Length: 315
Ligand SMILES: [Zn+2]
Image 1 (cartoon, rainbow, N blue to C red):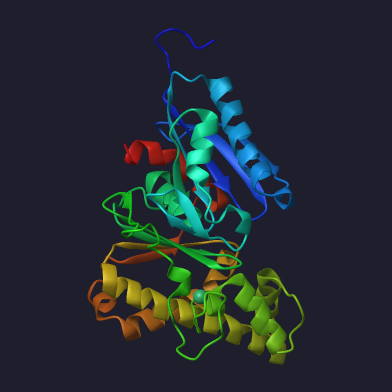
Image 2: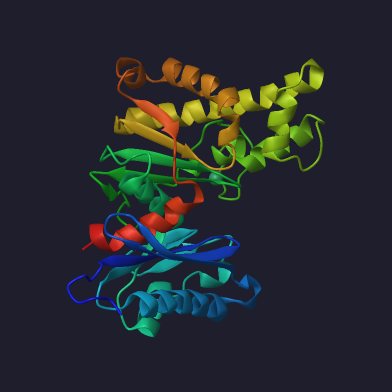
């Protein structure tokens, strides 16, 4: 029982990843009260996944009480049509495409939910209680198997008119670069994601299916292999630099955050990234002491925090 007069206001955030589902109850101050995480049986399809989302939310709502619940947000990977609550494209969850995901979850729970792109949610989480807590404007790049992007402007997610803004992994950084699943060539994520690192290591005969960590370890060694591995991190840094220079020119924001499993290699790619930003962006050179490029601090929890924060910023 919650003592009378001590009702805690909280929200529920859900982060639907490519392989797992996590949900958390988080209070207004950003304290995580409870977290559920588990692998969903994604192969079972739409009803099973939606059923798991609803079950996780119900469990948290019952435990913490419906009285203090401010709302709920659900972060999903893919391109979203905000108004309709649809995913129009989601390589990881194709069976959720063009289905009224938001309204179906709402119907089953009997209350409103907010659907958001997972990287947008992560950017919002970093703004709320992570590395971006002191600013109202930031960009987040999540460096994983792909590259996700989220833009926070004036403390809110910048969505564009449909909800597809912030697809920063698909901005062109090499005009005739590697082909991408999106139809473009030379997308940032084809040259600076963990998948790109693995592919480059393969191409340079360093090994097959190497992880970012293994390519980092190789780069720390002397000799030809080390040289090749360092070249990979240079390409990663330069590609990020080209992308970030364009973002700095576009937004003139004070903060650009990077997150994901490649951050341990920061010392190897960041100097190249900064150099290219300086070369390519007048705005960056003119604001160098005030413009920060930094590591995000919430790790893979950022999306959970951001999803939970949505009801408070969107009301
Ligand atoms: Zn692309």
